[in-house]
Image (spheres, rainbow, N blue to C red):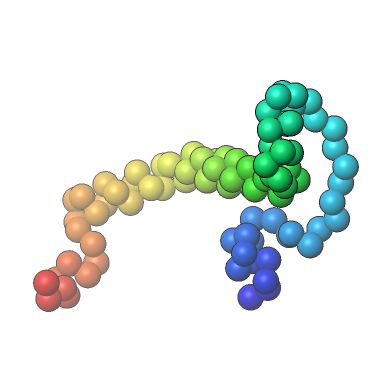
Length: 88
C-alpha cells in the first residue's frame, strides 16, 4: 500500500504538485488565524478533502440506492446467509 493511501484513504495524492489559488477571506478571521499560527494551506486542504469525501460518499449512496434497498429487502425477507451458522 502506498503511503498516501494510508494517510488519505486514497482520496487524493498528497505528493501532487501544489497550485496557487486566490481566495477572499474575512479579514478579521484571517488576522486571528495568522496570529495563532494557523497553517492556512494545510487547513484548507484538510477541509477540501473532508468535503470531497463527503460528496463522493453521498454520490456513491445515490448511485447504489436501489441495490442497497433491494439487499435490505432480501435480508428482511430471508435473513442473512449465516443466520443458521451463528452460535450466539
